[in-house]
Length: 256
Image 1 (cartoon, rainbow, N blue to C red):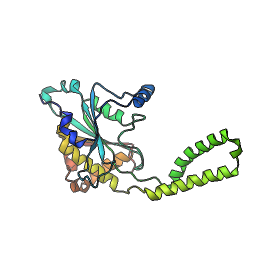
Image 2: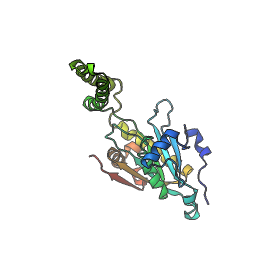
Image 3: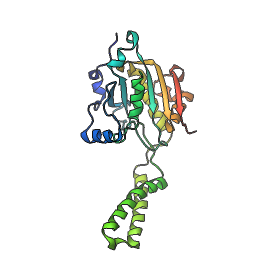
Image 4: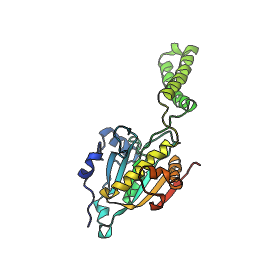
């Protein structure tokens, strides 16, 4: 029987492993019913998939969810497991491979792994939202802070407080957009192409079958995965598998 890759074998590619979550995270997840540890899944976090240490960023990482030894023993003859690459959505502007506060996207990786698939969830570089979108986001925060302030200091309940709050919203949104514009298309797709190429080369280290990789994308992630399937150049440029070498594509709530 083929044994699973020992975490030590891939330690050089990791910044951290899926060890026990911090106390505050475990308490919050207990409150909302999200499990931070699962006896059926072994997790490996924050593995760089970009090969160039000078070009990669914190967004060029992926997490791996491996069926545990319990499930592994149920696979006949130690056969390599199918692989799933799940690409998150968010309008190309938001979210990442995992949310430590809510458990979003970890739940996807664990669900697939508990069903016998080695699952890879990458992050990719994002486009910063427009000034209008940022103003809406900042208005929620600054508006809340201003409301709390005038509640405790009634003397500040005047037009000047309103004006300063509105000005802060506009200025902060413009400054953030100028200082951190993010990336534009096709950078998102190019990043995920690198992740697919990495999985193809390293899947067997986690007990996954490099010849049985399925792309699964949600929303913007569905668009990115579809681009990889219909535009072979993205994968070819990073020495990845051709679309015909992938097992399939599942595009969920895609944006076209």
